Length: 154
Image 1 (cartoon, rainbow, N blue to C red):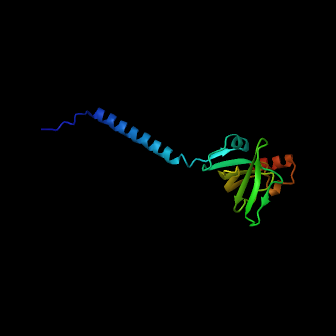
Image 2 (cartoon, rainbow, N blue to C red; image 1 turned 120 degrees about the horizontal axis):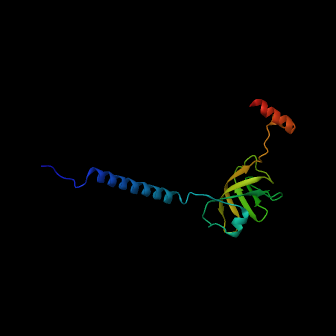
Image 3 (cartoon, rainbow, N blue to C red; image 1 turned 180 degrees about the vertical axis):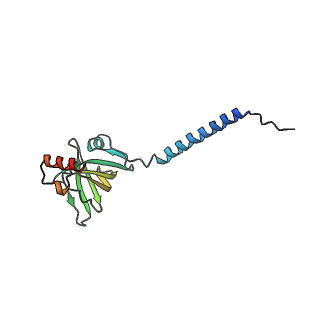
């Protein structure tokens, strides 16, 4: 005497596909829930001034370092400066080793949290270089000479 499972092979496959689909959706939801606090939102000064993030939220602030705003503290490690986008200004404080390209008038992305006093406390600074990079060898060439040199190498 054989024991009947009650399901045909076709129905067993459908049940197996359904279980796999539910498991896949569950894994995606679990990953989304686990990573929700790891996302780092990007703000420009105007956005941060208009709608500041919560005090505990890790965010990125991007803009230009205002000329004349950089002040190094007596400890030689802490620096305070202002990031601007032409519409708003956000004071920033950073304690650590600054990137070599970090200077007044340059672009910067600061990672950190907005303090209760309105000062952005950065944990990390990413200096942005301009897009007009020219290798040292091509620095004194005219635009036509540079184009010819590039064309010759291709």
